[in-house]
Image: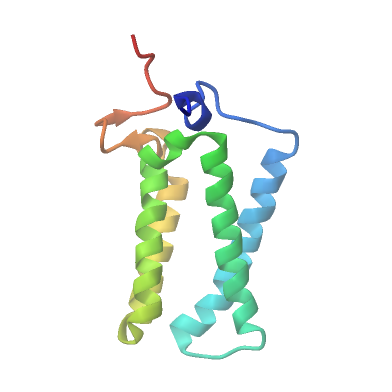
Length: 139
């Protein structure tokens, strides 16, 4: 049987260079976003278009994996829930050709709001109806 601490450690997991890895992943993600934006906003096939999509998706999935590994509580916080919403919107963007610009803009707006929101909002749990930094000890 797996223990709760494996997925939800009391203190988030860290390693040397984690901050720089996150910066590199975010930077790659933004570069992928820029390339994909040309395709979705202006319906322009640009050289290397698929690579921008691979970069966007690959760095996004890597950031999700890193956040989940650090502490699974992320999935209960608004910052994690916003990512799930963005994934659904991205799926809609890929399947609803008539609304690609709209879905793309909504995803960018949601990303900007959540990533730059105060901690009280980003760490808020809709499920727990409060800021959730860690799970309380079970007695």
